[in-house]
Image (cartoon, rainbow, N blue to C red):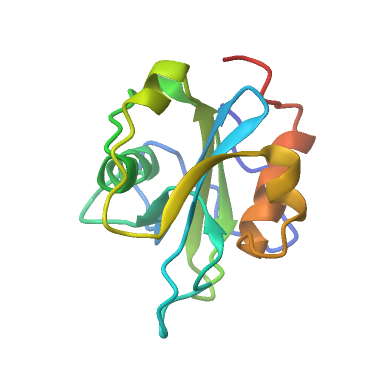
Length: 161
């Protein structure tokens, strides 16, 4: 598990297991060289309408970052993954609230997970998108392209499936 080294927008370096305040968590799930993504609804008043996004969202109650991300994954994709599938975690300064923290987590999908996806009511569609495509797609949420890049620069790649 990788916790925050240096960050151009420093945030506190809290533990993935909680005991601190944070706004939410996003989860990059890789299967080989592909990434699980969904297209956000095209509604006024939401951030990044119509953009490609990763599973995740806002914290509820006293959730840890992992609990938050895995709950959102269940709600958005109908998948229940064990915490042990999360292989990377890093805290970042929030893009929404100055001084707050958000988490970026990453882990692995299995082919059987993909077959079990039941897409929820948020978003228009989902797909397994090549990592390289997401990284250069102008319709991908910009800060998530960057955070995925940090994950890849840290020496992680989607070679297992």
